[in-house]
Structure formats: C-alpha cells, structure tokens
Amino acid sequence: MTNQRTKITLFVLITLFGSVNASEKITIIYNEQSPYIIHGSWGPYGLIGDVARNISIKTPLEFLWEKNSVPRQVHTLKENPTNTCVLGVSKTENWDSLGVYTLPIYQEKDYYLFARSDDEFFTQELSLKDVFSNQQRKLIQITQYPYQDSLLRLIGKLNPPFISIRGDAEFALIALEEGRGDYVFLSESEGAYLAHLSNRPLEQFKKIKPADLPPGEKHYFLCTKATSTPVMNILNEAIKEVTHNGEMH
Image (cartoon, rainbow, N blue to C red; front, side, top):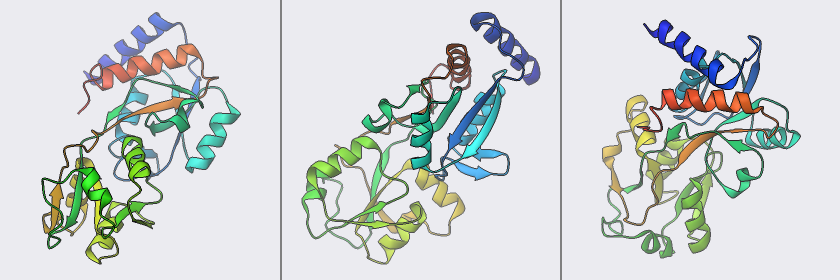
C-alpha cells in the first residue's frame, strides 16, 4: 500500500510540475545537531533528519546527503550551485538573503528553563526579564547549537551574564549540575531525547516556563537561488504530504 501511494504521489508531482529526469539530483547539506539532525552512515536521522528522509521518498529526485559545518553551508549558498539545499534552518536575518525557503518541515516544541532544584531564585512567577536582569545568575549557552533566533534577540537586548560551553544539551546539564552556570533553555524535544538516552533524569532540575518565553520556531530547507522551480515545487508538494499540509507535531 505504501509503495502504491508513493507511485501515485510521484505521478501527481510529475503531472503538476513537468517531467523530471530520473537522474535529477538534489544535494542536501546538513550539520549534526542532536536530537534534531544526527549523522548516520546513510545520511541524517533524528527529529528533523527523519522528516527529511521521508520527504526524499515522496519525490522522484535522487537525494545526495552531505554533512558540512555551518560556515561551509553559508559558503555553498553564496556560491549558488543548482539544486542544493541546507537542511533544518529557521528563518533569520542571517539566512534570509542567502536562498529560498521551502514550506516548513518541522515545528519546534516549546522551550523551558531548567535550573538546579535547590536554587530558590527560580520560581514559576519569573519573567525572562527578571531572569536576565539578575547579575548573579549565569545563562549556559552551547556554542555549536545557539538558541533560536527570537530567544537570541532577547538575550542580546537584555545582555545577561553567561558562560559558553562546547557539546550538546547533555553537556549543558552537566555544567548546570556542576554549578558552572545557573540555568539553561531546552525544548521539550531535547528534554525527551535526554530522558530517553541519558541516565540524567530531568526531574532533578526545576522546570520553569516564563510567560514571555518565545514559542518554538519552524524549520525549513533553505535552497540556493539557482535551484530550479520544478524541483522547489516537487519539494513543497512532498513536504505537504509528509507534514499533512503543515499540521506538524
């Protein structure tokens, strides 16, 4: 049944948007960021990686997966090769001028503030302004995986004390446990991932959701400006099918 539905989908795509060569290729560049994009021997997997692979199955295109750093991704977009996209970016001023976004492929779940359970400063009534204005509390930032753009703008505006660490969300929690920083923001997705794969239960931390904490952002393919219109249309139609017309969970 699945194969038959896929064949029907391909027929509709080709009928709507013109023929595509059987050998038509599209290069998808990605940077590892668990639990969203994790590098595997056959390309990316994870919360966003799995969606991307499902999208690839729904198209007549041959997907080429290429792992690269963010600076290299930016360089590639500026070089503007045809039929090349970066996986999983959110809309920001830094990305906007570099290419063309597809429809969204993933909706980030809500963020929460995590702090040590014995820190009496952190209560459910706090706002982000209250937190960022406290000069005795240090925010933990992960250098490879910055917070979403809307949260970064607030951090830049209110300029709280912070420390930068290398690693992933689990390393941030280790830094929190050790007292190197006092709080960190994690999404529901990251929390569930850590609870599943780590022996570090989140219940040992305070979990707070300030009322002014921005909602999770959407993620997209960002394709070069030279990517053909038929390929962009095929991608977007496949995205609609995989995400149920944008009803992402």
